[in-house]
Length: 117
Image (tube, rainbow, N blue to C red; front, top):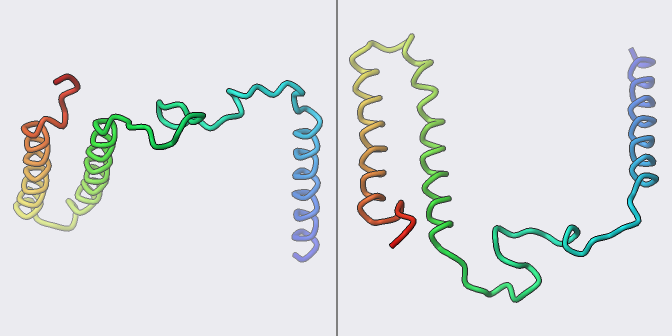
């Protein structure tokens, strides 16, 4: 058992060193300033970092994350269908989806989902 562990560790180390050496050997000598600069969501990182940007993108992202997390909360409801009775399951699912629909209706009324004003 100890021999197998030692052998696998040595093989992993050899493969890791080979991959690192291949990376160092195959590096391109042409360095483009634009390709080596970080990309930050639509605004130029070479200018001041205090430039105003559209807050609408941030709001849409937060809305997407909220609804994405809530969709992942719906998946356990499918698994609990086997263990609960149908009336409780339907009631919980209906309330959960109703809360989601009220939330999206509120965002729609507030104008967070409109791209042009």
